[in-house]
Structure formats: C-alpha cells, structure tokens
Amino acid sequence: MKKALRSAKLRGEEISCVGFSGQMHGAVLLDTKGEVIRPALIWCDQRTDAQAQKLAATPGSDRLIQWTCNPPLTNFTLTKLLWVREVEPANWERVRFVMLPKDYVRFRLTGERAIDMADASGTLLLDVAKRAWSAEVLRRTEIDRELLPTLFESPAVCGRISKEGADATGLKEGTPVVAGAGDQAAGAVGMGITRAGVVSATIGTSGVVFAATDRPALDPRGRLHTFCHAIPGRWHVMGVTQAAGLSLRWFRDRFGAGPNDGHDPYERLTAEAAHAPVGADGVFWLPYLMGERTPHLDPSARAALAGLSASHTRAHVIRAILEGVAFSLKDTFTIFEEMKVPVDRLRLGGGGARSPLWRQIQADVYAHEVEIVEAEEGAAYGAAILAGVGAGAWKNVDEACDAVIRVAHRVRPIPENCTVLQRNYQTYRRIYPALRAVFEVASRASVN
Image 1: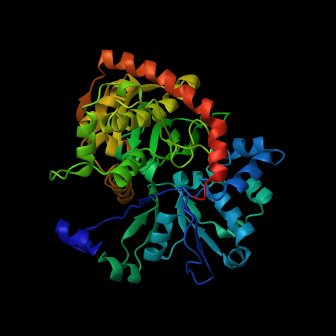
Image 2: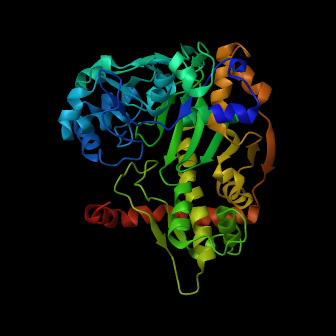
Image 3: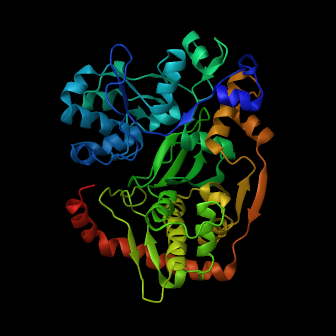
C-alpha cells in the first residue's frame, strides 16, 4: 500500500475511503486472539467433495437450494467448514471466527469483523433472497452464528483504519472502509454490469458469465449461482468455468510459450494459435482441469484433448484451448436462454479481453457483439467505485458507473466463423457425456 501511494504521488490523508475485493469462498479460520489457525481453504480446494455430497443427500436438501439459491458444492465456504470439523477436529475446536480472504485483510486493518452480501452469498450460509444469515441452514449444519461476521451492503462503511492499520499501510488512521465485494461482484461493478440485459464474460484463472437481475433468479438444477449483487436491492446469476485462463497457463507451464522474442508469453501463444484455422481443424479442448461447476456440477470431471491426428500442431492445440474455454462459457449463455435472462450487451473482462484473437473467438462463439471497457482491472476498479459511493462521491452505484465507465472497443462476430464454431459447439457438448464414466475412474485413480 505504501508503494502504491508513492507510485500515485499521494499522501495517506488524501484517501477518502478504502474499498476491498478478493477471491471468493475461501475459509480463513481464527482463534480467540484473532490469529490464523491453519492455512486457508480456498475456492478451488476439492477435498470437500464428501461434505458436499453429504449435504446434497440430506433429507430436505431441496430446501437448502431454496434458502441459499445454490446447491452444495465443494467450492462454497460451508463445505470447507464441515471438512475441518470432520477431518481436523482439534483445529475446529479452536475456531472462534470465520472470515473470507478479503475480509481477513480488512480485519487486520480495522479490527472489524464484516462481510458484504455478495461474498456472503458464496458461503452457502446466507438466505440470498432475504439478504441475511440463514437461521435454518445454521441450525441444520450446527454452525454457530457467532462465528460469522456482521453483514453489510457493499457500499456501506463498515469500519475505519486503525492505528496499526495506518502504520502498516500509510493510510490515515480513521479513514473509512466500505464492505466491498468478492472479485466477481466487484468486477461486475467495475465493468458496469449493474442492470438487467448487460452481461459480462470474464476470463481469469476461472471464467465467469455474470448477469444482473432485479430479483433472485433461481436455476432449480443448480447449474448457475444466484447471489446478492454488490448493489443494494439487486441480485445476479453467474456460471463458472473452473479452469478458464488456467487452461492456457497450464499449457504454457507444461509445454512452453515458444521462442522468446521479447513479447509476453501469452501474446506468443495466441500469435501461434492464429496460424490454425477457425475450429482448430477438429481439435477440441474440455477445460476441466479442476473439475467443473457450470453446467456439470462435477468435481470429478477431467480435462480432455480430443480429435488429434498426426497432422495437428501446437497451433491447433492452443487454438482449441482458446475455443474450448469459450465453449465452456457458452454453456452458461445456453442456460440463460432457458431461464430467459436477457443478453442485450456483452462485455469481456480479464485476460480474455486483452487478446485480440481471444476477443474475436468469444464474439464468434457467443455470436454476439462484445465490448471491452477502458478500465482493465475490473475488481479493483469496482472496489474503488464502491468506496467512492461510500465516501459520498456519488449517491449510488448506478450513478457512479454511468459517470466513470466507458467502452473502449467493440468486436463484431464474423458470420462464417460463427457457422463453424456453432457446429463445433454442438460436438463439444457431446464429449463430456461420452467421457463422464472415464472421468470418474480417472478421478479415483488420481493422487492429486
């Protein structure tokens, strides 16, 4: 923080409010002194599969989805708490406070135990429609309400920088701090995804398709997540691909990015992919390196590269990865159609928005014009917007987004590309059902 202040040529007292964002779902467990008990169990930890399955098999589990608007998955905080309670009982006995990652950072800077509605939605402990901790879920799972932070709306001030926080960061003691939001809700604010019809597709380590709604829109099959938005009185639905940008990073780490010509490794990879034709000459990539959420809800799913022949090259494989990630995200748009979630404007974010080739692939796969906004760091930008609302710079999040978010680029789909990729998408959708039994065997045999 001190380095950031120096870089911006600002003094701590010039900062009027602080916003927070961070990865969702992770469980940071603290003892009576506020000290960390064990390393956090983060969002992608799959060890909690047994706890998720047990919750799903519990009589009345359909009520759980009604209360929390989500099915029990390995990613959610509740399954991590149950795992610690069952597998590490000595650690569980010491737990007095449960926090999510960004909220632990705020705790260290303010001494306050707080959480926003959007991030709390990803714990599986929140009554999402009522925007309150679910007494029924807490009772059924025997989780003590006193372990949980106080709930706030995202733009609400929930604490102030303490003397210790000021010493550590260079901020002024007493600077107000807002609740902020998890990375997806804050990122949506940073991209202006605030009203129905404006949708984002973001590719980071994971990939997320995010749509704002005026009411909780529940997918009864649990393929989409329904959370509170960072905007008071609004909600959102989102589909998640576990290993979106991670797929390209996995290829880079295992097989290299080609000769070093001074350019960014990912630029080299996408430049190589551009040498392969649209459709990757029949090569398909299923990006299930870490199981999958949308639409399969299957932690045992595994990645697959299908359609290879001796004539294919690295370029075909890399292009198949780019297209396969977009196909996986398109699964969410297919569910949006079923649920009648409108998609009028579509904005891209994350690493997938920086690559001209990946932008075009997404426009062609989604068969929809896509927009890229000026501010690239959506979650951090969204956290700053929420802080601005909390400080009174704008009266609400809508006004703030209208004032500061601008579209920098638009990319139109190419009709002939859409034809090829729509045909390939139909083939892509047949691969997972064909290999599901194989994935289950592979998952049981895996040591990782």
